[in-house]
Image 1: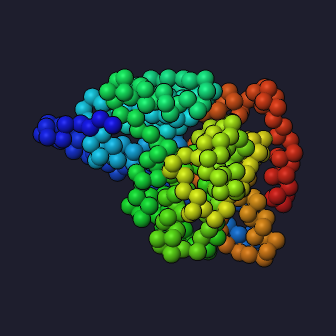
Image 2 (image 1 turned 60 degrees about the vertical axis):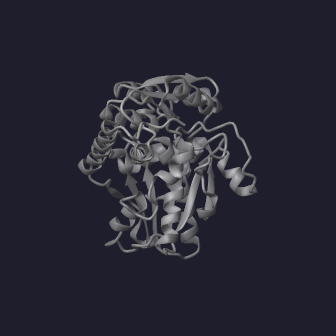
Image 3 (image 1 turned 30 degrees about the horizontal axis):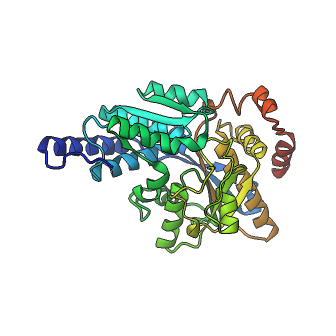
Length: 357
């Protein structure tokens, strides 16, 4: 790990200005909206979607990228001219490229070759360079190599996500949800449902729930091919898996930021169901969401069904992680689905049967 020259007053001044620039971006961006998903009032259950797709870079990862840049600046790892390198499945790299451009820093995203063309184009739009690797598990070592070669900084979201964000509050996503629910019928949700890519969001929310002494339970929705669910179920944190086709969530290994002790439940979601959920949300709400949101909504449907079966009332909250426009040539393309052997039909019929006509 290389450090910037903390004794140079010009460097110190640059870092101070960089922190101000990043925080000014936060100040310009109002909080994301909490939308109501239409469930029958007689159920006594409210479902909310927190729309993280409206951040300046279009995804939940905008929060993480901002926190990682502030963490790197405050830790003395990022200075004037530092090349920032990140291992990513796309969305974090898009957001980090945005912040690197704000600060005038070079940025390299190391990503699987299967990353959607739309995400690659966005990274390049913000001035970043994309370094694609054939094997998804190679992104970590390749990022370290490039950082060493350029004398830069490997941001390493998969290690630092859970510590870069202040889980006690400070306008984190959990605090925002509770503030927005304050005037709702059930202001303390029964469940919050999120996916896990780095594990940073689930770690932040789970810690916040305990710190604020809420009874809300945390469920993590995990796609097929991910190592998180089998590791959580078995307690073997050395489990590996093929990796996920649902970009942004699911990993071939259990990442260091994943904190299983703050999770109350995990729900595995088949890929076809995730993509069907993505399309169903568009049908019901008119909002074009990505497949990781479909994974979340599939888990929410399971939980709402259980609550109804148990005679429970309350609220469930999940996230819109990003927009469908990032996946027009994959999840939005029927030909791609056929190539992947994914049949959405049974899952779409199940989702449509969930809501009465």
